[in-house]
Length: 136
Image (cartoon, rainbow, N blue to C red):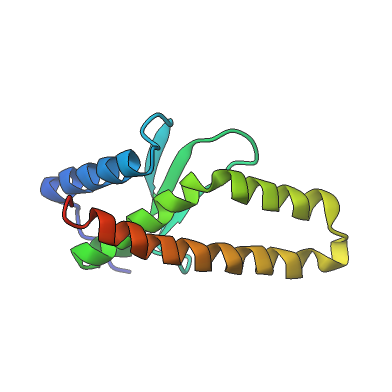
């Protein structure tokens, strides 16, 4: 088992600066926010938690995030912040699945919602990356 490399102060400062610029661009600066280190397991490099009710920014960062090139890190962060900005869409689709869809259809509808959201967020990630890259 390998020990994760320590995160340098300069990386932490740059991370905070990038996140602040992204939050400002997406009008998320007013939210309660938290960025957490996540365990190694799992397929994603970063992920967002969308709460059933309310609106908070909670992004989990896995150790492999810090090994990615700077441009990739920025894209991952933009991607996760867009999920937060689209919280109402995520909450509504989750509520529809839990309250309106019959049990035997839930997994198909969840997959459709997840895939659709990821395609839309991936598209918006590129749009916002192009708009923000000169500021980052």
